[in-house]
Image (cartoon, rainbow, N blue to C red; front, side, top):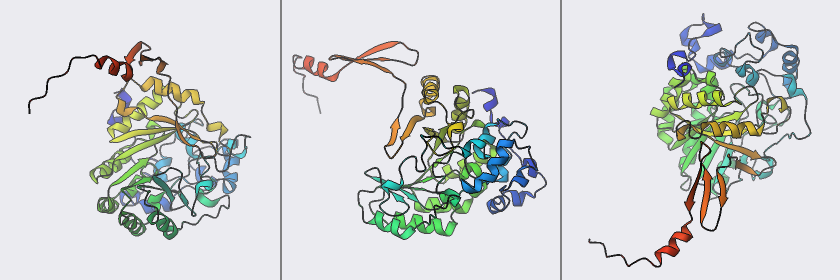
Length: 394
């Protein structure tokens, strides 16, 4: 463990909101009500760069500005290049659209048999159940939809989505996303999960959420009881930088784990946020300490206004190369590109296979050393001439 990854060094406390009663601070509805959504609020705590200020005023045409007090505390207000700040405060780069960028970068709209439900892979569907989040990531794949700043006018249609799933027995896996499903009330979540559990061919439900990271106070006993009631439920959270691993997030993931919810993490590779091996190694180690399995490392999608945040794909390959063999396999995520236009997730790996001949596969290990492994066909040919084995005693 790197010394700074010790739990004692994780962020804790109420920061700028130290005078707020603990009862309010721990109330997720108080956190939502007191989100920072305006330039004037931001400027109470930090000095915006001219690019940031212009982008904040532009955000009502692109993707709304919203930051929970809890998550705002993780920003280094004296550092314009703070990795948390880059993720959550609008930047002038959002106002420029590059030729390769797309409004619907992974082609979801083309795979919607009913509004709000994406059926791309044979046995699973993506069910978009809200267009709201607790805070808004500036690289959001669904920035066209989330917060409705671009007038996409998305309205979740629970019943038509549920009807489609009921009528398609090949669907065994349902992923709830949005927006963020955990912003739904407990009553709505209980209803939705109950309906899905009642469908015989649905084997389990997954929830994609950044609420534990933006709003860990939401993971309370009542919500965990709903998960216990309707399991098996799996959850993918979204942590990009070690600083996001806090004492409150640790408690939230512990509650989820004790409620029987396995947790994976999906990070997005972001320029000057986590695009170096040391930062990523620290992150994955902290995730495992929270009972969270690093699952995917995504290349940032080609959303409009994202060039300033998109890291070089080769950085992702380099990171995986530095993790594989240098830490436990549990800590190594799969690096993927969600192919533009609807191609789905494509794994991107370092080249470990050097050569495949008629007799063997030649590979290199994490140290760069070459090794050979015989192909099965060669072994079978040798077995044809082997003496007959004696029968086993039973």
